[in-house]
Image 1 (cartoon, helix red, strand yellow):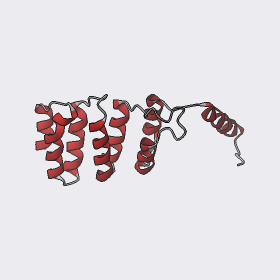
Image 2: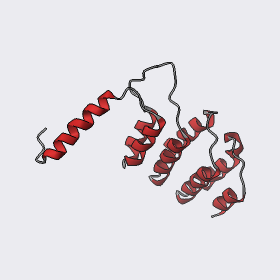
Image 3: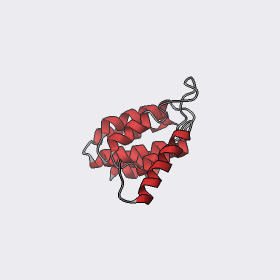
Image 4: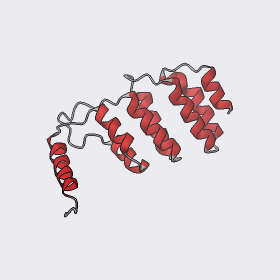
Length: 144
């Protein structure tokens, strides 16, 4: 590729070299990439396969709560509710992560805006299965 701007060309070459030197992706790096990704379909692909060439294939990728929060927000805003349900199911099985109530408030609001009150109620009812105790904040999200 020929770039008219020499600085841009240098940056792209430098970025490509630095990306190839990285051995694995951390959850911090994944959160940064998810934050920058505008396309929710590309973001979910990145979330599902954050490390295409893992250094240790037997060791699963350890997602952070921020990674879950970012992908849930992207999917909810774009009304990709089936993918959102898959991420919630993954969050439920990830026993290392204890989600905060605000994540569920956001999910309930997304389902409410998407005219899916039964799914919003289902998320509220399942909050204890995620090791999160519902409080007045989540009740208010359900009612609004």
